[in-house]
Image (cartoon, rainbow, N blue to C red; front, side):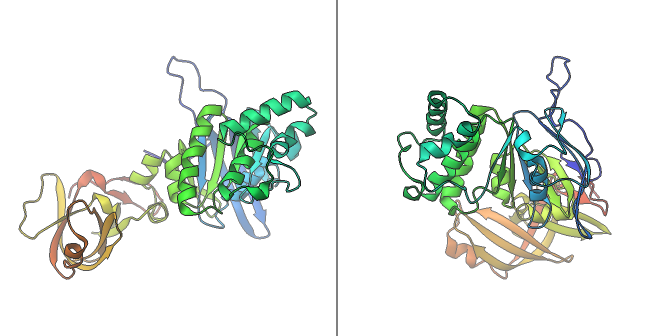
Length: 366
């Protein structure tokens, strides 16, 4: 189960090696981290460990504090309180150029007067790496991001997706301890963004560098992350694997922010259940063993191509969203079900109770 806001403390992100040896030193450790802008707490006491070689995502809406966290790790912002460690070394007061990290931004920031190979080599040239060595490493980095043979082109001659790959190659070629990515796919169209999600994950596995990725896109976070944190109002709402956070949201905010979730209240207890976990049945149809069922009426039907979304007004109160894949039912047939009486049911172990403290647990049978 994913960790919640009530129990995320400064614990190691990496599991024991399995042979009795202690877990490795985290690539990034944040302890009691705080940052205020006037009276606004952008980051409010964050404790977090990110493991070596992990693809870690900070997910949250605009203004949640995720980018401020990233900028403090990079050294672009200085914390008001708390500490930042990189590989076990305290760097809270170390300037950006003194930290072994690189940052990839949304706008790529490529030099227009340089060709692609020169752009990728730039960081090595600043570090006075010999020309032959930096050329070898730059060409190797371009091959890794699948842009061999394009080194002589200028940035203006490349597509947006290609320029993003160049920015990634330029960051990787320096072999940073941690690579920070600040919403780098935000300017790409949907199809290209989805392709780059898979490419980023492939590259991260190949190079083995710790990636810390910031996004407000839930699909990106679920697709690429080994683990993720959901950030809200400068605090961690939940920490866990994509499966843990999606399947077992720890709070009403997490349930509503990641995907679509139903929040219902019965007998003074609130619980959440995902739309795809709910089954639609005809009145009188036998309810499977171990399932909770309620009567309702189909208020609206929304055809979405791959799936159809049903809005169900429950007889006991509240509205439930149900999603069904369009495997056999034709679109016209689905739309014709509007106004019909139905029964909805779900397994008891697929709904989770949420209390006011943001903790959660499976709802026991009543």
